[in-house]
Image 1 (cartoon, rainbow, N blue to C red):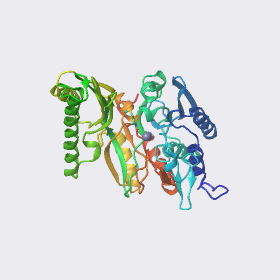
Image 2 (spheres, protein in one colour; image 1 turned 90 degrees about the vertical axis):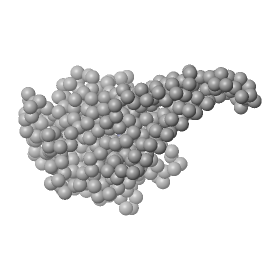
Image 3 (cartoon, protein in one colour; image 1 turned 180 degrees about the horizontal axis):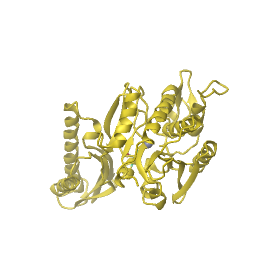
Image 4 (spheres, rainbow, N blue to C red; image 1 turned 45 degrees about the vertical axis):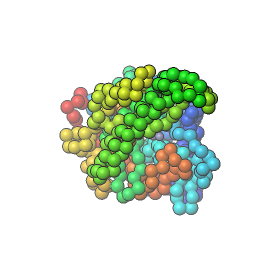
Length: 408
Ligand SMILES: CSCC[C@H](NC=O)C(=O)O
Ligand SMILES: [Zn+2]
Ligand SMILES: [Zn+2]
């Protein structure tokens, strides 16, 4: 047991709160301060620390605990450093103060997403190292920038670098979501983000006239087709208790643009949609469907992508996957109930899975409402500390997985 700090706070909690106070908030994250914090941790833990600048100002920090058998592939523990913006006026406490209330709830942007996990990895490694363990497999902790805006200047580039190849990752853990029940959710796949902008062009003219073939009426048709599809998917989810959110395709109309004046019929209007395509969907057929909706609306209706993920992957959750076997076995030994699901949004796991690294999304927060990206994002210190215990057991199991066919 680690001794408590001056105010009776567990030092892991103190460290967590320190990390939460670093303003790595989009769109101008202070990555410099976060990287300095991580370098200091590496120094304290006696771990090597590598910095890879994948894009100007965007550094991936890798802390490494070498295993005893360098021929084995490694365990990669990933977390992102950035957090999403806040609406300060809606918070009960300053989101960058990491205020802890009398019950033990820590309020901060990043408390769930996902600075908790970063510190839990570090503290689990600290504990295992302190207890004198030495596992066969190397453990790498990667701390990446840019996830909250898509990872295009972060993990997407990092997986293409020689420094990533040199890690020889055999398996990865990355973020998941809180679970309000006693169970823990674990994510084995993700939906593919498709951000689609539909542009409709038509005849302009005076707002008092019945103009034929306007941009607006054709856009309306596409919007109706897509929102009808949305309703179908919503019903499919609602009517089948076995389906979880990530198993169906969602879409939201998130932007409408166009027009200059009340009395001018515009020649162009556009609608933007955030699709999250379920991993079992035939993406070619789905794109043809989009094309079909646009064509059916009339001439001059086109679409373009702002995001288009086309490599959905599924990490097997049966005993054919030795990593799943070790992960689920360790959870069983701790009496944890797991709920395997498809992540409804996008995380950096998709880049890892796409280059062949099986990954599970797991943020050990049960009995906790899902508050990521929300006002008053918070986590109870006891849940946080239990997470450190959980990772301690998980890492022992994963870093001890015996030689696999892929290892050499
Ligand atoms: C499609 S890139 C954006 C990634 C973002 N990830 C976390 O919220 C998301 O909206 O899912
Ligand atoms: Zn996240
Ligand atoms: Zn997020």
